[in-house]
Image (cartoon, rainbow, N blue to C red):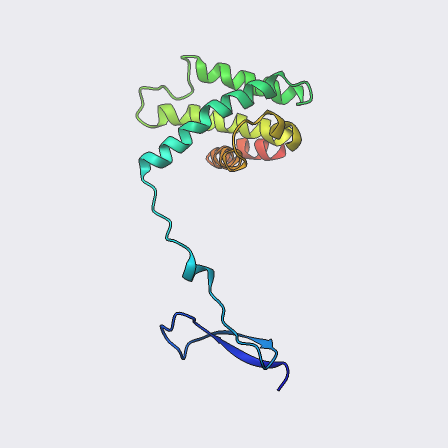
Length: 165
């Protein structure tokens, strides 16, 4: 019968009665489909050290990106000024939460920095950011994700300010 539904079976023969799916095929066609998971080699798990090393490789590209965006006149002045003020705050010894308080002393600087990076990147046209970014597209997406996550840690009033832009 022309155009009948033929069950597709696993080619490896694990369970010959297991039907994965069906499709309409000419009656003289032989339906053998390999599922991508059947043929893909396993992906080895990465260690913490490998993930940390990858993240650290982003730092030079991020520093260059921020420097270039701060000098680019196509980026809104208000955003460039905010990033400059935050950079000065992070570099200064004066903090909202003193550094001698475990965990919170360092986290406040990171959250404020993440807020400023997110604030600057969202106002910068994507083509300008791409022009100034030296790393991979995945690396840039990781930076954007981390910056957005930092904004999520802010109290509600500051988060709304960041979202309003």
